[in-house]
Length: 113
Image 1 (cartoon, one colour):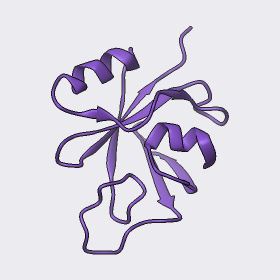
Image 2 (cartoon, rainbow, N blue to C red; image 1 turned 180 degrees about the horizontal axis):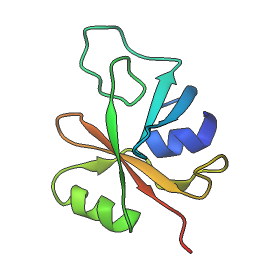
Image 3 (cartoon, rainbow, N blue to C red; image 1 turned 90 degrees about the vertical axis):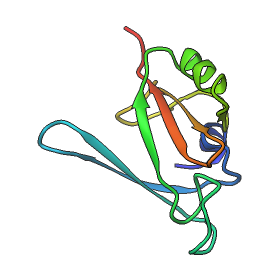
C-alpha cells in the first residue's frame, strides 16, 4: 500500500507499507504493517510511519461521529476518512486519530448494506 490514499488516512508523508493480515482461529484479525521510512530507534514515535509505532484499530458504525467524539476529548484526525480501494476490506472507510500523548487509534467503518 502507499500513495495518496495512505497519506490521507495516516497523515504520514510519502508512506509505503508492506501489509500482512492474519486471522486467528477464534476469528480475531491482526494486521501487521511495515513502513519503509521511519525514525531512529530510541525516539518516541510521533508518526504512524515511525519505527516502533503501534496502533489499535477499532470498528465503528459512524466514522465521522467517532472522530467528533475523540476530538472533543483533545484528539485529532491525522487525515480524512478514505475508503479502502481494493482487497478484502474494499470499501471500508478508515482514518487514524492521535491523542496528545502521541498514541494512535485507527477507526474502520465497514461498507454499508
